[in-house]
Length: 438
Image (cartoon, rainbow, N blue to C red; front, side):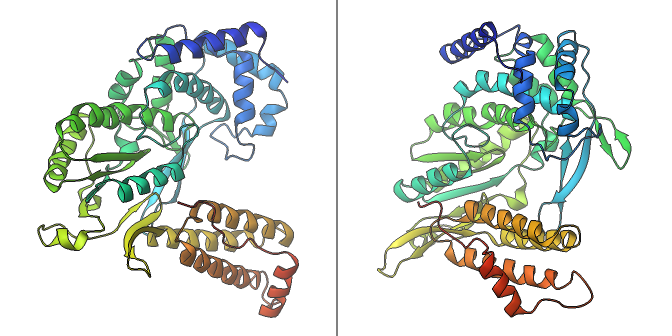
């Protein structure tokens, strides 16, 4: 297996040290960091079972000739002879009424994007603010939710702006995005490769669709980082430097990728920031989805504040959870979280479709093993404090769906409920459990 030599490691270490030491410096000659050894690491970091792109090359097929392919790929990159394939567009369910488009890159495109992602992460991570949680090392949905819960319960937050950017990934302007990247990247070859990826086009149903001047394909290896870089300048930095110093009351921004909420102490300042946010997004070529954007009263003192405001007292959804205030048995107010109704229905429907499609293709032991993995993944994410009711409800739905579709493997019903229970006792499915205690 290819590995870094001492000279390559030293060059990478010097690059990382300088990027951290000089967060405002610009860098050139970055493409020289994409060595054969680094691209080998990028290749092995890819998922082996990921869907193939338009090249139809699998991870195993590429690995069979890795020692010949990677040096050739590296040489093409350095002489600017590498040209990305169009991304293969597929659709996944977004909610009950719509689907989300995903762009699946070719395998070599994934390798090169992973290499560029590592370089750009080193450059831009020192600039990122604490309010940003998406696609950053040591951070994730649960750290974002925990920080939000802390702010809403222990800080003087009385109002929440639940905002949604309309079609963010489809409307990011390429020129504006590259302007953000050039704040640290002066290597014109890297910038040209980013342009090539953005303009590679799309293949859908065998037809090639040319790229436009805006949009970042969801599903690309480098897309989340590029979106983070853009939103750092468009939202995070603007809010911290331009907005917060002008406000008298407490405010907090919590962002995961393109999803974000803002908490306020004073209603007047919440309206002020909402108007400024509309103007700021317009400057960046974006707009708010007005039908999904709400300013609500969200406080343990909501009833008192509602008497002096036209705003509704409401709950809000963020990162798959519905957040709400309730009174405990002791009469104290407590902020809690439950699986949002939309996400719950989406997860149950997705599990049903998977069981329906795979019951004939997979033998029972393999089907049962994959079902276990799906349940573990659900409980790992949604296993938070105060969400036991939704977890157990999903547990019941999963067992009922498994029984239903196992019985439809043939025209004869071979399973009784008693036999299903006995099989599960022998090969138990994961049970709901608390994973994240806030």
